[in-house]
Image 1: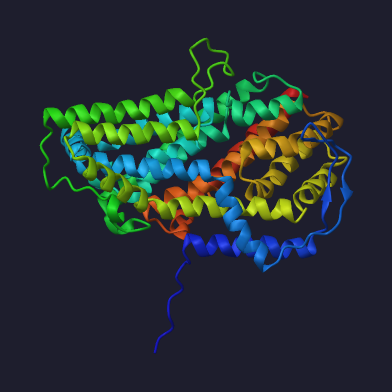
Image 2 (image 1 turned 90 degrees about the vertical axis):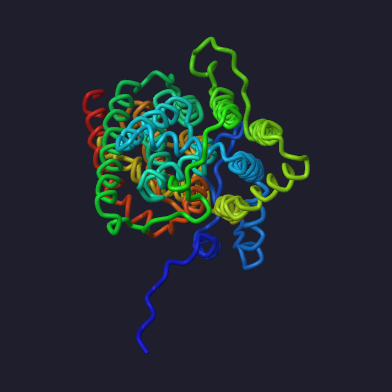
Length: 463
């Protein structure tokens, strides 16, 4: 009997193994804390605290605590699932996709740069990241129908928006919060970040386009093979695009446009447009109303609308669980008292470094920190008040500390299993985590090298 080939465990198993590893670390890493003023850690105030090692029960509870912590995102995902299920049942999406593919007639490759630029603009301006979850069930079928694989659909959204988030120019959630703690304005370092966005977004578009062209010529070269489970759409079965379906598609597009407008923080970006300030509770209500409206427009009965909406929610329940469990990592670290200790080790590593060495070290220290604390705003609040004062001693401008922070944070969040968006997107596309890494690792290496060059260049020019 031959040896069985190793199979990558599911996302659930990977996340529980990570939870167990973090719990084990709380038995080895000493517990400690900074002094906090108004929720902000003060540099140089780290001290040891009573150990709080986490056991088996804590690991199990952390998964549920993470789910409670992420319940707003999870409910949003369920509402998107219900909305899409109703719209899909009307046949409007199938008809629309078929019409788009027929109209493109061999020019589908232009969808890649156009969509990636759109998502990249959202990422770099207002930190479009969690919001992209609504687009995976919509766009993956489009790319499947165009002859690509599920990885292309995921990459267009994840790498398009992610490249923008890495080089956040005026993103108020990552750059804005970090700049405030670093004592610099949002405009400081803007030129460097703009250059970074152009370089990284261009590299991502080239990388995804080259892969897409390769697998279209030879589907056997796909890292996952053809198909994406329930999300697949076939253009073989032509669905007529009736006036009613056109109306439903307009409603469908309007729902997404309202979502995008509602989350953009115009005031924080210095724009005078009316700001809605919506977040996941309001967006969940938007998709609930959109689903009901689509069902009524298709003349479905009340019972059909409810059953179809609930079935759509059920389809994405697994994705919601993955998002919740991934939040449990941070819960365990905080409960075990090791979050500030890990940050303190970074503080000690940076002491006495020269300006170039300091910026490089900050970037590399933020890589593991982001793995453990994937929330960019949370990591900024926790770490930048400690890192920025150290930068001043090393002769490094606060804007460079901010750029190093957001670059590392954005890079890791493209591949880490602790990032809810990554694991959720892969679950929606039925793409195993190891296949995603196999696809994206070369681009990640290029991103890392290019960012280091830009950070060093920025340091030398500001000296």
